[in-house]
Every structure is written in structure tokens, then in C-alpha cells.
Image 1 (cartoon, rainbow, N blue to C red):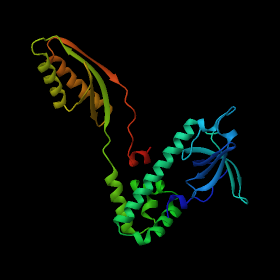
Image 2 (image 1 turned 45 degrees about the vertical axis):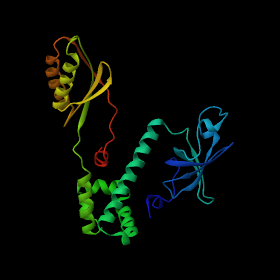
Image 3 (image 1 turned 90 degrees about the vertical axis):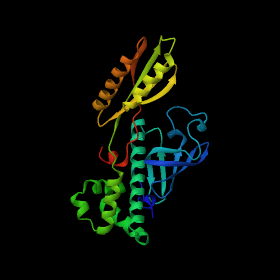
Image 4 (image 1 turned 135 degrees about the vertical axis):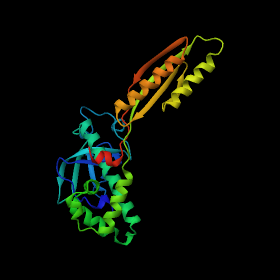
Length: 269
């Protein structure tokens, strides 16, 4: 049993993750991967606003799409979905939610294996979902050692294994700052040695130095918070600048992409 077997049917206006199976001139046949791969149809008029000359420009086979349920006939088990009725923000949040649930499920399965409860896998999954409704909620409660988690009917030893795995997944969060350093020397006699010495100094100050292209280098520092990382860069840069006798030494802050958070960080958001 896995997460796909837990959710049985979607409801009108629900956001769902649909995998494209077959594309026709009238739309696309899909599988709803959160609902045991139940069939759904994406009409061509629901793919995008405006007239669509070639549907293949917008979607392709095996693509996973975040869609909204717009029609559901329980008797005929017919489901229609819409891609155009989902905003980019909704799509992003839905994918994040789905990925977090899958990672929480993987952590749950790890606990089953480590506690040697493989023969009771289905029962443990069923009990956890019955009590906590999702793997994400179960791991959240385990991480925060809530009253609900303590009172859970799940085996005590199994819950202890889960708690240990959650603790092992907790990583001390480090915050990075990045700067682009432009550095060159007018020293024609020993300029290369001078620059090499400065770069080594920066590395010894716990700064990650990487070469971009002459005369630019990337400097990255980590800290328990952004202020600590900035102070680390500032201290190292001041010392490095003093070591450059005659030349150019300029730094410019670089915007970093958000790092992927670990499962515990995401659970606590």
C-alpha cells in the first residue's frame, strides 16, 4: 500500500496532479496519480485560454500537470479537469505539498524497515493515515512530539524509531551570502603570487572561493544567520584588501537562489 491507495476520489474544485497518458485533437487523457491513477480527461478548451491550434505546444505525454477538478460524475466515474483554471501560485504550492507528502511517506517507510515491521506495513500505514490523515501531518506531530503523537495507538517502539529518524533528519540550518569579487593587481613582478596568497587567505577565513573568469571570483560564507555570514565576509574581505598593495579590489553582493529546505524545515513552515 502507498499514498496512491489512500486517497480514493477527488472533489469538485480540488487541485490534483495529473499525468498525461494520451493526447488527442479534443484534449488529453490523464491519470490522477494521488488517487490510485484514476482516469480523468482534460478537454482542449481547458488547456489554455484562447484558441489552441496545436495542443502539443502546451502539453506532452508523461507530463505531470497541476489541474483543477471541474466535473465529476460519481455514477459514471467520469472526471474532467482544467489546466487553465490553476494559477502559477496554486500550481507551485500544490507541487510543494505533493513532494513534501512523498518525502514524509518515504521517511515513514524507512521507519517501518528500521523497526523490522515489514510484515505489518499495511496495518501501520492504515493506522497512521486513519489517525493523522496524511504522512506529512504524522511526521509533523512526531517532530513536535505532540499530545496526539504520544497518545497515538501506533506501537511505542515504532514511534521511537520514527522520532530517531526525524531527529537524524534535523540539520542545523546554515544561511549563505554570496559576493562577486573583482580583483586584479598592478604588480608586474610578483602579481600572480600576490593574488594567490590573497585567495588562500580568504579560504583560511572559512570563505568558499571559486573562480568565475578573470578578474572575477565568487565568495560564499555560511552562518547560523545572515548577519553572522555577512560579518564573516566583511572580516575576511577587509583582511584581504589590506594584502593587495596596488590594484583593484571591489565586491558586489550576489542574489542567491533559495536553497532546497530539508523535510523538517518545510514541516515547520
